[in-house]
Amino acid sequence: MADSEKQVREAPSNFKSKVWAHFGFYNTDDGKTLDKDYAICKNCLAKVKYNGNTTNMHSHLVRHHPDLASEEKTAGSQPTIDSVFKAKLPFASPRAASITKSIAGFICKDLRPYSVVENEGFRRMLTTLEPRYEVPSRRYFTDKAIPALYAETRAKVEDALKSAERVALTCDGWTSRATESYVTITAHFIDNNWELQSYVLQTRVMHESHTGAHMAEVLEKATEEWKLTGKEPAVVTDNASNMSVAVEMTGYQHIRCFAHVLNLASQRALKLTAVARLLGRVRRISVFFHRSTPAADALKRNQRMLGLAPHKLITDVVVRWNSAYEMLSRFLEQQPAVTAALLSPEVRRNVADISTLTEADISNAEEVVQALKPMLVATKSMCEEKSPTISVIAPLHAQLLSDSQHH
Image (tube, rainbow, N blue to C red; front, side, top):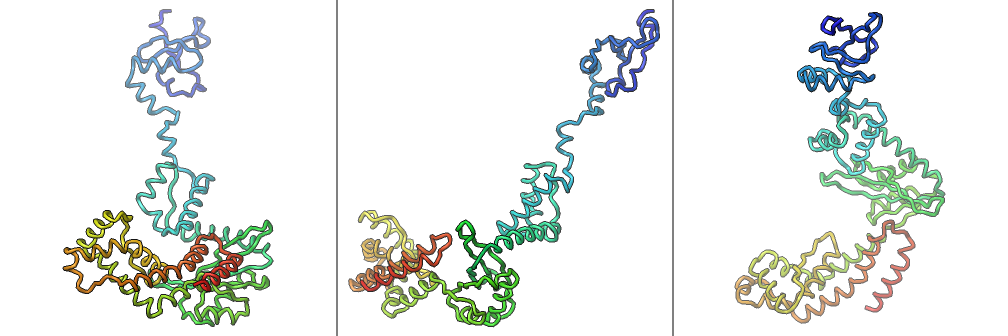
């Protein structure tokens, strides 16, 4: 029988590829079985060698029936790369849960607002990193993710504190930029490996007044909550009177912050009449050179002429005693250029109330800088220590006493 007279039979039902919608087989000459040596195109009756896979049939459709090949590709059962990436991760899947927990950690560690998860740039970044991940709502982080992370972290801290024989607590009252008052309590202890460990236990808003009695209540509640009462806590605070009263009321050992003591001592020295008057004169000169463009230009010109470093003058800040030291030091460094600039014609016309310092003033400034330098060294030593311990204080204190006696 000629091929044109034969009837194309459907492929067996277990042939699942979509391509079989366009191909079939002829029967063998005896008519009992399918001749599977060749697949027959239903559209043009072309014979396509069949090797047990559909590669040759796909190629035939692409070459001779491109419109059918396009339809077959679209309807194909094989998922495309795009379809794989468009499939969303199940919310409870390990991958999605890991990303969500990481976002919660980011919010806590970097003190980000909850609204960050709604920000367009943040969401675009996450889509780039993991297109299948859907960011949970802000409400989910406030109600679920962050509380869960807090509970997990708190359990770890409680477990770590169990190994401490004694603890030191730092108690610090502070005010936010929004003028809200807070108290932060931190625990420090030596672990079994003789390593210093520190954990922030709590930061509480202070709605009531910062009286000693109220501070004592906050401190006692914290030690009870974290099961530290039996560990004979020693409490480190600044020198504020309410803190002193608070620790006295609790009966805990009280240690005053050495860095704060250094700051108070330095501030008292700066308030001496002669020193305060000297600082006022230098401050007026520094402010003048910051505000006057002709004076600033004259200072730069004289710095070049005298071979001095092209540094700007420094103006002190009331709350930072070391800024007064820095202001005097910079002034002494630039004093020749400052004097020359103040005497230049274009500047003298605008400096009716600014006068150069006398030799006695310069001498006093040098003495103040020399006297304050040991305090600055001690303060920097305290600040540079990641966790300054009491072992640092004894040598610093002895050195300060020795330096002050020499002066």
